[in-house]
Image 1: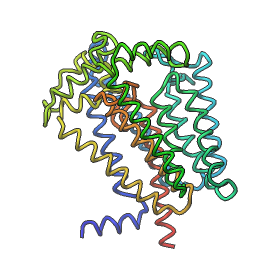
Image 2 (image 1 turned 60 degrees about the vertical axis):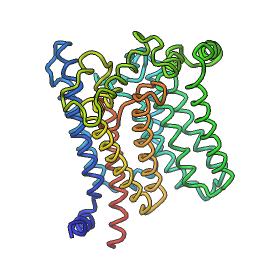
Image 3 (image 1 turned 120 degrees about the vertical axis):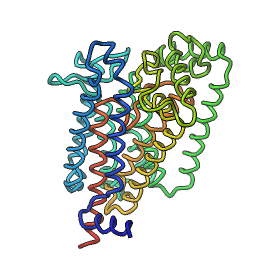
Amino acid sequence: MRVRRINLREQKYGYDIGLLFVTIFLCIFGLIMIYSASYYTAIVKGLSPSYYLNKQLVSTLIGLGLLLVMAAVPYRIFSGWLSVVAYGVGLVLILLTTFTSLGHTAGGRTRWITLFGQTFQTAEIVKVGVIAMLAWLVMRFARKLRGWKLWLIMLGLSLIPALLVFSNDLSSSAIILSIPIVMIVILNNNKKMTIALAALFVLAVIGLIYIKTMDLDKLMQFGRWVDEHTPLHEYQMRRLYVWNDPTYDARGDGYQVLQGLYAIGSGGLFGKGLGAGTQKLGFVPEASNDMIFTILCEELGLFGAFALILLYIFMLYRMLRIALQAEDAYGALFTIGVMTQIAVQAFFHIAVVTNLLPNTGISLPFISYGGTSSIFLMGEVGLVISVGRGRREKRQA
């Protein structure tokens, strides 16, 4: 009876209650973890213990407001020229960030731009623009451009921003490129295409395994060649060395990885207790952002980590339902794009902090400290909820 009441309420108000609830829950849980992971850092810097919490709370409230607005607005108004504008704005901001003095550098990476006194991460805007643009492209030209022509245009439109952010944000570049690949896999009914993409994925996995098991001296020789003949930076190659052997440069590039692994290992099954972790006390760099999953594992243990992963799976399941029931191609593909972004970003974060992938510096969706990411992710979820509302409204009519 309880499930039936929820279904009736969804039909009456048009909101996917499950998706709305899990999004808000993740944001609240993220605020708790950000405070736990950042209060010591704030005190050391002479700030209020709740400094980072207060900043993230403001961003969360703005994001929640944007979510509700996007959920209430019919998503179809974004399925035209606004999608093209979003894509264009993202490209312009990336160019300004990379090639002008407006770009803000931190930790040796220029990922942020300062406009009107506010600093925000431009890659988050680019991700939304790419998702919207690809969804519009398929809806508008799928009948005229079929098969390989459509796929190549989709990959090309994603490759441009991916290359622009590549040198400063490898993880965002990978996320941007994963969006059209997932869309192509879902859209195409060509067995050759499916086999080709599967083969590329297998080759990539084999390549990673080979690098992981490679002799460190040989890997360093290869790294010197790559540094001389490719646009990869030296610090990116050093991360491969650390990934291959976490004890490489244990006081330098390997320090963050090793301290993160110590935090995960010390948490055990149920953790030390919320707020009782010690690795955040100046040991794990970026504890409230790129490494927040390690603090979660230390304080809540493997049980807490597994519970968080289940929440992500539930969120993706609700989005998949909306995509399958969407009224048109734009709504379905936009939802698939948001699903891909959240899934890949969460996977990358967890894989990086557990040293399954090289360290690229990536936040955990809805959990890590970062105002730009929270605001835009919640806005995207709001538009996905609007897609679900459109389908239910059509059924009622």
